Amino acid sequence: MRRRSIHRSIPLLAACGLLAFCFILPPLLHSQLSTPDHLADPGFWPTKPGYPRSEYVGSAVCAGCHSSIYSSQIKTSMALTATRASSSSILLSHPQLNFSTGPYSYSIRAGALYDMSSPSKKLNATLTWAFGTGRVGQSYLFSPKDGTYREARVTYFSSLQNLHFTPARDFTTVNSPEEAMYREVSGGEVKRCFGCHTTASFTGDRLDEENLFLGVACEACHGPGAKHVSTMQSVAFAGTSYTGPLQIFTPASLTPMDAVDFCGACHATSWDVILSGAKGVSNARSEPYRLELSKCWGRGDARLECWNCHDPHQQIQSAPESYDHVCLKCHRASAQVQPPASAAARSCPVATSACSSCHMPKVYVPEMHFYFADHNIHIAHPGEPYKE
Image 1 (cartoon, rainbow, N blue to C red):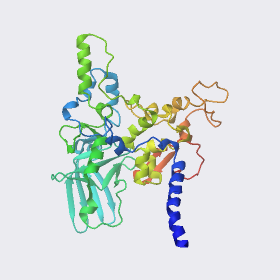
Image 2: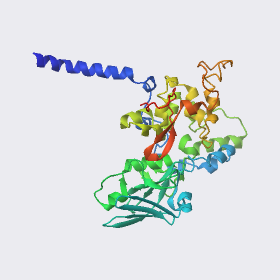
Image 3: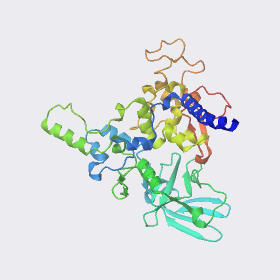
Image 4: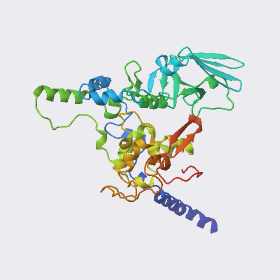
């Protein structure tokens, strides 16, 4: 009887556990989706493949009507986040990069020649792709010309001005010199790499290395532009006003939750992080996930959408004071200042500027050799542990 009673209680316990889990999940997750879920939905979403290359026009065409936006966007880290390795300014300006660990020695020389030496074997390859601007680091892919891709075991880090293990690719032991030199990259990973670092790189499952656009260009976020360009040109030719659909995706029209998920297509949505099981300070790199843990995010606040702080058409700012105007949309600068109608939050008793330096403290991520601003906006106390 006792055993039967226990078995009957298991479904009830499981149901109670699931119910509790649902209640303790932050309110931010109620309507959020993972990136694969968004990609499965109809319509455009960043990194979504399947559009014919003929539907893309390239940013230079966009510049015809949006010249000021274009001229600033092409200088951003996002626009410069991918290049052919042979053209990498980092590799060209560092003629010899080195790293050693145990019996293995690595070097990248003469632009894009990658060498790995071990007691039993020496291997070399020519790097083909460089991802990242070097603001934090730059990682590399190469291909043995059989349609597969390999990730170099080492990455350049700006804080080191040299090579070290590619993030999350360190090892204590390996089974072969080949494993020490590189990691095979799956087809799904190739899609994510090129989908987030280049534009119009895939048609269905086919990677088009020759015709893709380097970096995050206009159509990476706004979708294929051929229909939009055709529509606007027809209107201009007719000399009439136009109030119909723009035939282009407008991210500004998204709800706050979808807006943050939109950037999360490459920077990791809340569900992307949760489903991956990522723990610890490494997830400080997943800004959308951290932002949505903030108490002030609630169920989604349009004042906290990513692009309110980081205009994707402008280079990112590093000075904390650059973001004070956003904080003051909600908070008073001091108790004596009359708050704007939109500001319901209290003033800070400690300082009147550089808000993010205290409320978004920098977190050191060891595998990146870099400090990242924690986008979980909170009252931080010196010495407190990282909040999951």
